[in-house]
Amino acid sequence: MIIDIPASGARLLPNPLLDRAKPYGPAEQAILSLAGARKAHATIRAWDGYTPTPLKSLGSIARDTGVAQVMYKHEGKRFELKSFKAMGGAYAVQRLVEQRGSAEGLTVTCATDGNHGRAVAWGARRLGVKAVIYVHEHVSQGRADAIAAFGAEVRRAPGNYDDAVRAAAVAAEENGWTIVSDTSWPGYDIIPRDVMQGYAVLALEAEVQGPVPTHIFVQGGVGGLAAGILSYHWETRGARRPVVVVVEPDKADCLFVSAKAGRWTTVGGDLDTIMAGLACGEPSELAWALLAPGADAYETIPDARAADTMRRLADLGIAAGESGVAGLAGFISLAGDEAARVALGIDATSRILCFGTEGATDPVIYRDIVGREAAEVEGRPA
Image (cartoon, rainbow, N blue to C red; front, top):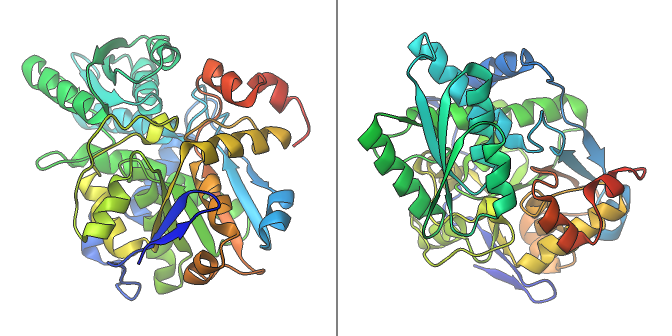
């Protein structure tokens, strides 16, 4: 049953497919595993410039929302990318080169809303690999330019993100390129596993930085990050894992719609949301295989809630991008609704973990929404 939250415009759907008693068995481990996450962590720790991103305690938000703690893992300074995507796209490129034994003659390609393409381009530059990145017509020029700055060729495809995915797939077939995608489809699932396995490193880092959360609010998109975070906690804690809520823009809610329908499904339209990194109409089939039985709930939020949360974090000295705040915005959007709190078991003892997946990755958009430069914001004490 969907819980509408008029005060914020959010909608909450407790997962009708949830099976909390289901063990994390061989089928799930074949998609993502703790062993795979540890291997990814060991690889990424060896990269120049690696340092765990900070886990910030947002005391004022915890007090205002009536919980014990709100924790925000701030990815705004992850390597050169200001985004968690480095953990996935760049890791998958390295795995590909290792498996081939050489970067010679290799060209990688992908579609992106911005951050994944930047990560693939950065990973390709690290290893001397050519990259051709497809962006759709709604990707800002600032994000396209940021990808090109890492040496990639950027091509703009008409339509939305899913149209760009198809354009990249056609070009790869015609040119003998290798797709490095964060979404999967029939016949293409090995590289997306590596991407998602890299995302799970965020959970490993958070594990030693703060207390075990009771609830996790995590971004949707195609579902890769949510599946990576869920997999870690499901395999290590089983039925006693934190409650996982997957948050999406109300204009790009493919996971919410899939859960409501009881099966993998897609949404159409232009998917035009300020949360550009989450503007996805087709779930990753691999991610959905874990989220369908394992995620506790799905939530949609309007763009205004993301913008409000960006400004609120700016007042705390944190420069966070539009997609990066989605999980936290989702929590704030339902924290004042009694029915939602009861449905999720949120009370005064709850410890909430949110992943701030990007910093100000497009400085122009950030300034337009927040009214300040990111450097000015982060010059203040957090």
